[in-house]
Image (cartoon, rainbow, N blue to C red; front, side):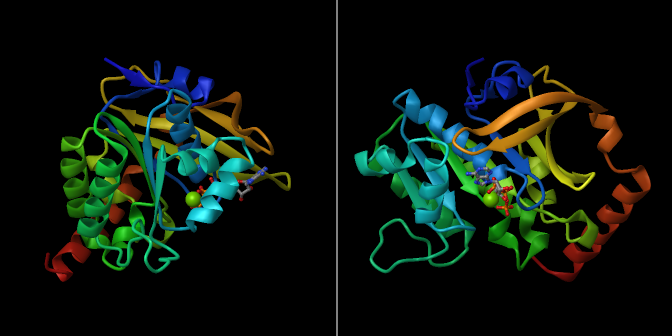
Amino acid sequence: MERLSTGIPEIDRMLAGGVPKGFLVAVVGEPGCGKTIFSMHFISAGLRRGEKAVFVTTEESRESIIRQAEMFNLGFGDAVKKGQLIIIDALLKPREDPFSIYTLDPEELVKKIIEAKKRLGYGHMRLVIDSMSAFWLDKPAMARKYSYYIKKILYQWNFTVIATSQYAISTSEAFGFGIEHVADGIIRFRRVIKEGVLKRYIIVEKMRQTPHDLYMYEIEIRDGVGLIVKRKTRYRREDITLPQSVTEKVKEALKKKRGEIPS
Ligand SMILES: Nc1ncnc2c1ncn2[C@@H]1O[C@H](COP(=O)(O)OP(=O)(O)OP(=O)(O)O)[C@@H](O)[C@H]1O
Ligand SMILES: [Mg+2]
């Protein structure tokens, strides 16, 4: 099986070599915990090998993405200029920009991604959708259906996909749930304030066909460098999964919601 480097050696090791080619991996977590920066490393690892790539941004403008990536020397500015990377902007929607999305509609998203792919050329490509949950913010009951649709189409177009998803389980809105079941893998970011200091963590929760690491690792976002893995914690996957009773309650709430909103 061919695996793609994430651009972060320690995370590649956690994934038994990297992300399996052709997979759709969900990168989930709270705001500011490193999802976008991780996705940038993944794209940059492809660019370094001369690959072409597509990055969809819904939370920040194209310019903001380029600036952030440049802080870590990930080569986004250059790649865009050379026509090696297309950043699809779903936020600022500049007029006459061929790679902007005007509505957060999954069909429009897929159409635009395919247009970008045709522009860049054929063959395998890395794709980031940051964030995927933006496409069903106003209709969370559609999350699973949309995720399935996007995965199915993109699979035919020879992409390996990182799709980010923010969610707040505490609100029981469960934005991320659609993508988690459909995704081939789940990488979860977490953040905690310990003794007055913000700490960030990463754990691989799911990766099909992969004997992945089950431990949680502390990470750091370092200026000029980017995301680095600092140390292994003593926590394992089962220590941080929700208790059964909570999971059941969330499932119930979701079912109710599905019933209320006809698809
Ligand atoms: N140059 C830098 N040096 C150090 N840390 C930085 C630098 N740039 C950004 N950061 C850190 O990275 C964080 C943003 O990370 P990132 O954008 O990946 O979060 P995210 O998980 O995508 O959040 P959201 O869900 O809100 O999009 C900032 O809040 C900041 O703490
Ligand atoms: Mg982000």
